[in-house]
Length: 322
Length: 308
Image 1 (cartoon, each protein chain N blue to C red):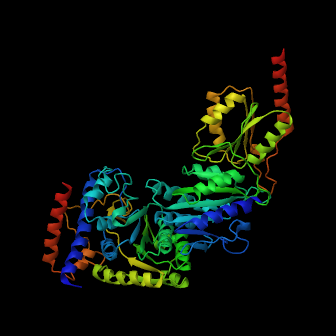
Image 2 (cartoon, rainbow over the protein chains, first blue to last red):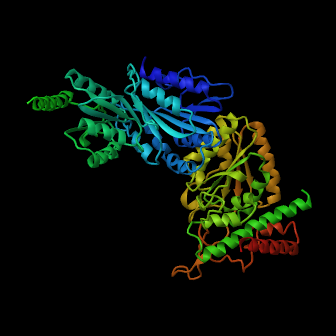
Image 3 (cartoon, rainbow over the protein chains, first blue to last red):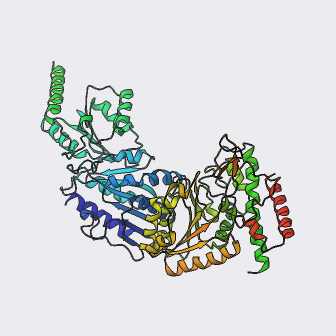
């Protein structure tokens, strides 16, 4: 099943289950329904699906108003870049609403992060964490079957407000089927593998790169712990620090283009609490921030990293044998 | 309207006027850290809005909300305590002035960001539709905020989705220290509303009795027709003062926007101008001068006791 089809199925289940719900957005019930994301949505009698006018600032405020009135509101957004128009509502309105008891009202913005490249200078924003950090908003990214199921079923209609970011570049790909070893109670950190030689920690929508990395290491007989940090703020790093200290090797992958990275917070923690044998920090170089149509994908030299780790590990084994 | 009802309304107008004057007294002494936007001259519409609210109706306000909050709370003490950021304030000292709301009395949201409250109100109206709830959202905005895109966006959304709502546009001609003609082209709200198929009405008499009667009708019409109504209220924010400069030896006119009004004082007259710009002056068309004075004396005394 494709990534978009899987998410669509989960949303349909949630929407069908919900009472007092309004789901709204541009073209969500017309045309291709956001490239299939909102295809065939059906709501219970009395609930609403609304194709809205193009007015993102107001649509964010409308979602908050509906939530304040005790209903479940979901704003399905074609493109995260458009959420820039709603920053006033995200910050100023939420700063008041957050002080109140949540009640039954729910508001979810599900936005497509256009990270498939070649869109041009303006449609290139993958800075999901920036939207969340600007007002301390709960946010979750989705890359695979396990996190999709966990996040959508626990968050889509839950009281309170959050943003869920999904990846345009993964839309038409077969969704990664992942088995989860553990999920943090706040769904900020998912662990998919436990290993001995390295700790791979993926931020934002970079888990697919981490899965490739883990596979390459396995080919060389090395096992790695694999984590995904799906939520930009705030994260309890204790489990991750514990694992890094066990393996002694950190491979951090963060695909955000922002200069304001949650992975920096982890690195500060690591600096104070971990002794590392090796570390590989894989992030975008500032010069990668090109403002013209561009492939926009991270280019990772897996062979180099796997080679270095294999050499280190084999060297360690030889020392142990001596 | 029965005479007894008229007396109650006149008393409310006076209570709002005198309460604000007492707040101003303390403001001038430097009592408050929070910025307060007085609404002297706005009392008629606030009394009218409060009077027509029923059941689960919701009121959404702006940074200039003192008059509506006084009308809804029915007393001065809670609002004053909020300005002092005391725990016993209307919002437990957590919201201060510009964001002050009072959920127990239907004031559900107040925003200090121009135009911000209009989409939130539209969302509340959408919530009423989802819940099939026969109540109305009343949102207050001004001639400055209608310049924001959110005004247009919200009206389009309300009309497109068949939502009931009263949009009260307090038009005092000023935004901060600039008059409309100093900052923009005229906006013909009647034509604008008409272009969207939205009902438009205008108030300019400063007559609270007329406002109550008409607003109650608009409320019912909006609910029955599942459509918004724009009500432009032409009014004057009183409390201006004059600043003497080399260029203005007689004093340059400074429109009241926020902060203490230097020339307003509880020791002075509570009627600021003998024109219809002042609702208390308008009351004199309905009551004898002595009746107004007796009411005002009694209310002032009650308020002073309340906040002593």
